Amino acid sequence: MEADWEVEIGPEAPVVDALWGGFVDLKRAPERIGEIEEALRLPALADALLRLNRSKTIWTAKCDLWTLTECDPDEMDATSDETTHAVACYVDLLPEDGWVFSTLESAEQWARIATAGLRSVRCRCCRVDLVIRTALVGDVQGFGITAYVAGCGEGSDQSMNSFSAALKTFVEVACNGKIANSPRARKRAFQQNQSEVQ
Image (cartoon, rainbow, N blue to C red; front, side, top):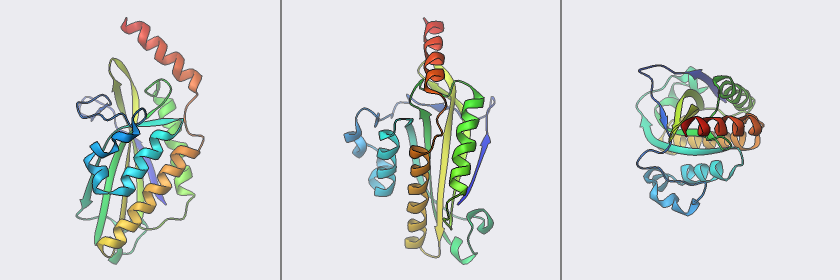
């Protein structure tokens, strides 16, 4: 699978604001999946969100789903004919223990290992990009990761199949790989952040 990661941090860069107004806590209340419009539109995304939140390492804060008007065949491991239709989504991810990645290095390690795992899987016509961003969970600040997942094909059915395969592969790597930073370190960082807030 085509996969890459990058850091996007700065005054103009988007921020992962986990407790935004429309936040649905699927970690604690998976039965609320029906409140997420994107999950209702695509069962494969609903399944991915539920599986990510059932994992013991990460949780999701926000997602979106859209069709792509164009994509580069080289970036999707596809032919030109296979890029006429494409579907994409993003999912904001945060580590379970500590709520945020406490350091940029821990977020980078997560992204590096996840990207390596994704690249080791044979899966054409799809791509995952991981973008490390500043993240806020209430008053706790650290880092989070926005995962962009895309799939393409010669028609809408083929692009949806590629997209579903990409989502499934991403979830497998994210949930089953050893890609979370140390729980103890995150817990310490979280407790330190909490004491500073008080």
